[in-house]
Amino acid sequence: MYDELKNIVLASGPSAFGVCAIEELRPHFDALPMDQTEGLSHAISIGAPVSGAVLKGCIIGPTRHYLHNYRMTNWTLDLTAAKLSMTIQNKGFAALPIPASQIVDWEKQTAHLSHKMVAIRAGMGWIGRNNLLVHPEYGSKIRLATILTDMPLEADRPLEQDCGECRKCVDICPVKAISDSHTDWNKVACLEKLKYFAKVHNVGQYICGLCVKVCQP
Image 1 (tube, one colour):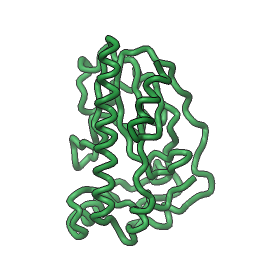
Image 2 (cartoon, helix red, strand yellow):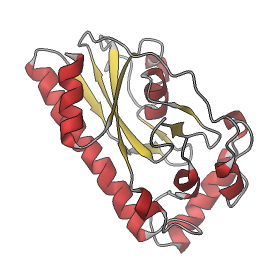
Image 3 (cartoon, one colour):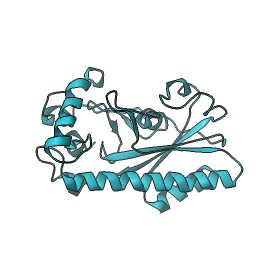
């Protein structure tokens, strides 16, 4: 079943796929009641890259062009997650698709669950200095979605990699919110800059793109 589901994802546009067990993660799903995820044992992580060519236009902050590409990438992931969920349900299992980008608490910047934490456990990448997922091929230029299921699937192994000596995201951050370790990432400074970009750059969404643009393993 693993290969069949992966092929569905790859045929639908997204190009990254991984699976992990979720029992230890369930208590940390911020907006999902425990009884809603009861019995769901695995998570399928899917990822799709945003356009590197579009990101090149983000010189001092986000652009409307990047906003559109960001939204369409999320839409593609959500469509794929819905398709995958229907396939799983048709085989007699439960499937709970989690939107690629649906914030439930804007100040805390939290969603139903952390796609990043699922993706890391599913072998899709590691946490970079910018506190984002770093995929071994796409860097941080990737968006994620998740499907929770009770289908018994083989779990992938987390990657044993890191950013090495790369500090490009540290150098480009306009508010110096990024430092040597992701544990020292200044969330408050980053969020305030995102709010500024949303208003002044007329994008209406908390996006930046600068550290994403330069991230390439």
